[in-house]
Length: 292
Image (tube, rainbow, N blue to C red):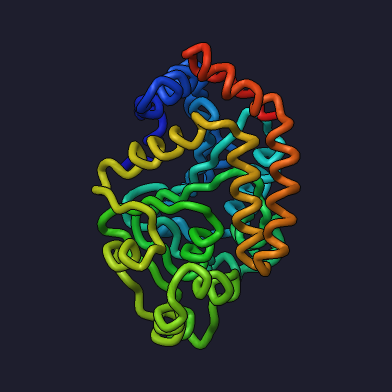
């Protein structure tokens, strides 16, 4: 799988009238070959932004340059009104990311690796308002798994593996794995992963709910973009508030969750998109979302 896979990909597949419109828009607005740095490739298809960690020779391990580039990209995308969904993947078919590049760390890049805006890899401590999908093209281990756990949805290749092996090296998963895994997996399974350091395969990860979908490696990126396209076909403001309410309410008593829900309803139901949706339905045409 080439690191420049996005130059050859067809536009996001569409299903239904709205989705077909989104796909046509993607075909018209794709910017081919754009990159922030050699270590990270950046591509826009319609309203979907694709970030590829491009260090296949190092199993896409995170060095200072990757962390800085990812951080800069995510900072910009948070403010980009034309970006509605972000896809994050790795180059090649061996690894999504092997985590921190220990050689780079030992050579003095630790400050850039860990201190970038958004935390490790520019992601692990970031509160990002838009949907993020991980396209896991190989092993997601250590910090690579922690980057994946920073994403909202996960599409995995059949050969992908998942784990936090830090205990085997006398360390712990320090970029969120010990915090997020117990929220995404049963506690006993999360403890097993942390204490044994052993990985699990894509099939088990899917059965446990850690992964949304498992697909053949050859179709991973197309399948991920199809999912991203289905999200991008919806009103972006509604999508963002849905994510926000669910994430915030999950940490609170239900009574507090209702307060957050009511605040979101007040904003979304009075938006231009809330008016456009019913009108478009009545006029039997695809909606034209403004994101406001």
